[in-house]
Length: 506
Image (cartoon, rainbow, N blue to C red):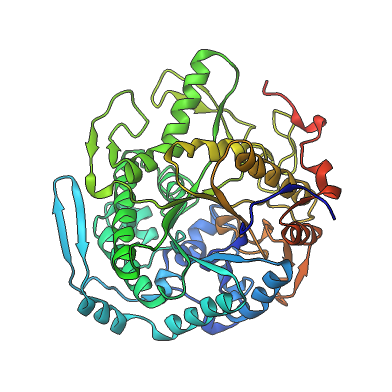
């Protein structure tokens, strides 16, 4: 079988998953009620007001108990890499605040955190040992099947002892614990990072500190349906800085414990901004949107510059933080769709245009004539190239760490997978970008956060009652691509987007 778009030798073909979305569902022992997200999805007010679906994680796919079966499915696909996270609230259901560490702090923020071996041993006394041992089983099983393991530390849930989303919501942030709004969370996250590195450093091939930190600060505090679900745009800058500092301090811990050779990155929700038309003011608006949405964080953790305008006003002080400079070894790009913007006079100088990107009608078409997913996200595979090019200036290795579609009947997933990989190949071969892997979201259907089980992202369908896994047609396509380490000739016609789907931005 001839291959028309071949990927580099050693390219990583993987899947990504999140503990909260996958683990529960097959046993009572798998239930973890100790996170903010668990409480958020069970809250009667949230359910009544339609903020959450009413679906709960304890009815999920059951990876905690069925992980070996799912790893076998990954082997059948031919995967050579797997990305997942240990759940913070599962490992530390009780507070770790009494474990003493040395914090170096000044008016600019937390510059360093020293965690001794004695402190690690005290953390070990507090940890849920059965959970730690079970994660070692899971991680070891991945490794024993010949797959590289990427351990991500944080994929959205916080322990309840760090964030009570209902109290925060009901008091509009006056009472807590208040999660990433509180500086103490930086210190506790550094402890968690140090402990995970200490316990699993022998198993991880690569590390990530955060998955989509920008989603945490944007949806949770702009009136969205993520905890704490409040509209407090005034506090988002503080949370952005706290999370950037938390990343840097976690990076330090992994390097100290595992060694300087440890590859530590961050995974970012990347949606490139495009102007609604070619008017100069709209082109400039798109540049501002890209900076605010995609680049501010990396300026902080790569260049060591915290821009206090946060991309929302014309001028701001730039705080130079040497302690945060060059704190990224690789960049994970999560790509699903684009942003389309136009100029507005008021700050931040741009606004998102409805019926493009993430703001479309589900199972329909966008204003550009593109199909939309079950979530109402515009299918725009060429945007993955633009997403990768956004970060090219940093010269860091990159991977597509999430990409997929909510598509219960597998109508669009096959061609979208092929077309997206065509543009990833283009980034490597034509633009010379160092893209070392592609991780599909996801292996199996799972709990799509506030949207519940209706949104089906899996290469395998899951019957949530019986836990049966059934491959969709797209699973066979991904399998063939992995076997060939590229797009085979018989799939070439799906690589380029059909003319009728190209559409135009009106």
